Image (cartoon, helix red, strand yellow):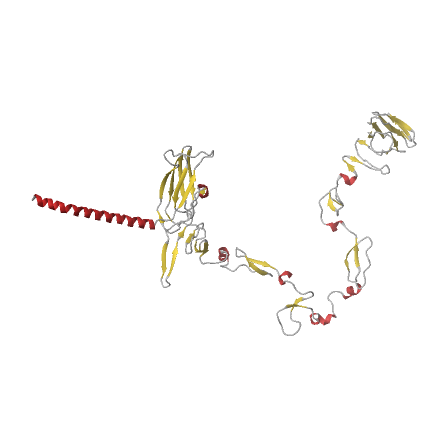
Length: 470
């Protein structure tokens, strides 16, 4: 009994071991097959490699959480939403600030506009930023960082639709807004701004249904006839569907041979007009008749008489020049207080209507200058002080109120009074010079008074040829 048991035990143990080994081997095979299947279905990734540093160059210490939403990778694999925690640097100190992580590209993925959200807790504070990973790498953080999270435009998963009877399969991806980016032909979105369906005919090419190669707004506007052009031709339709009207211009015909006209045929049956030379038949009665006044044409066989100190405004029916002087109305309306004059300053130029400037009157500042042979008349109704600056002697005439004259000249001079002024009128003369004398004489050259520098005298005409000095 015991021996039998021993024999049974001796034979059973190898059998049990072989069975366990077989089961274990089968399990390993299944695992290998699963890993192989998983490896064959992993989407392509791009490695983000960089060192996170502060503005002073010191490496950051801490960790970052990378989160993402569901998407379909550019190579067609479904990626579930999730998150990944990454610690900066390498152990055990974790102070180098280095980061290296493999991520599925966003660019070219569906929906368009997806991004990775990066939330970091660092030894100097926290941060949030967004990454948009391209299809190729490796890349740095600076090359994939986005200022703000882009808008996601994908609304529904892509779906296959088969049109019966044609065997044509069209892949439709529906989007909410017109900012979607087409990654392939056959993607569509409903534009909520225009309430129209827009589909892609190629990557990056959108067409609104019904497909038009022009402006959709133009096509919509042309649902009704545009307004006709009155006495003109339409050169085209603008983006608003409005006819662009224009008259025919000479340039519309291109270049033509000299001395040719646009006319019907010179002879024969009616035909489309062409550019050709004039024919005798084009002119009634073979040029024997003329339009206009024949007498005028005959008179103008010789030059008409010229206008003397006038201008010709036209030719009358007898061929005579119509002469006239220039009138103010010939210049049209002008601004008040302007004159026709040459330039106020600078080089010679054609006259224009402008305001007077002091230089037009020989004025420099507030001084009116004349030569000794000219008469300067100053008329006022109240007492005035007149300062006279001249290079020679001065003659005075009083026909109104008493005048006060100031002479600041630096050289001796003579002031001569008129012969028959108004009785009771006179002059007050002041010599404001520093070294000169002012001699006041009457019309007979008799000296009435001599004013040295700083002196003042009043001269009154009291009777015929009699002056009184006060």
